[in-house]
Image 1: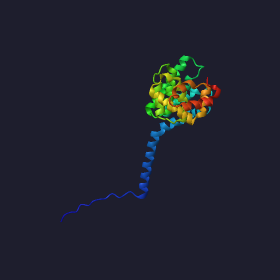
Image 2: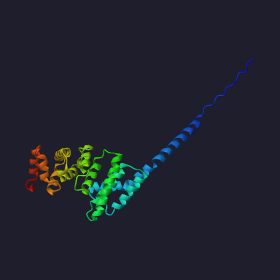
Image 3: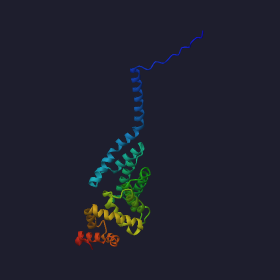
Length: 244
């Protein structure tokens, strides 16, 4: 008579045991995720004062007194914890504002603008679709050289990555018309487009810039007169006796 082998089946885990296993797995997963995200979270928390100061600058046009160097240090420390284009952008702006401080020696201004250019490069390598960053790069490059060494290309990229960025229109016009003689046909076409956009969307700001002289009416007129003479006449009428 053949002897039948017996097969022993494992008993399924009971309800409480399954819950314990699930809890342990979830806890382990949470620990792994927290460990991975902790540097990013620390960097974001460390960068909060820089964000607050830059927001204040965009509202008031000024940084808190004596804060520039400490904010730069915080941005650098945040980057050491986690590299992100947002932190590079903030650092670039802080260097740019330091470069524009006329009370600084000329060599320190140049050094600051060079640091700003480098920070924009690092940011744009991480995320190239950033119209404001391209504009700050163009502005810093424009200060560093009387010739067109990359600043008109950066200006073009600022327009291509964000054509209708109303907050950037006036700065683009100021830079473009200050370098009008150096612009190629592509850049001149983009500048003409930005001028018409600004006249439609930010007309009061354009008139203010023309009256204050940060936009040269003669240069604006020379670019528009052949294609948009009606806009030129509207500008003349708005300026009244200010056009010389």
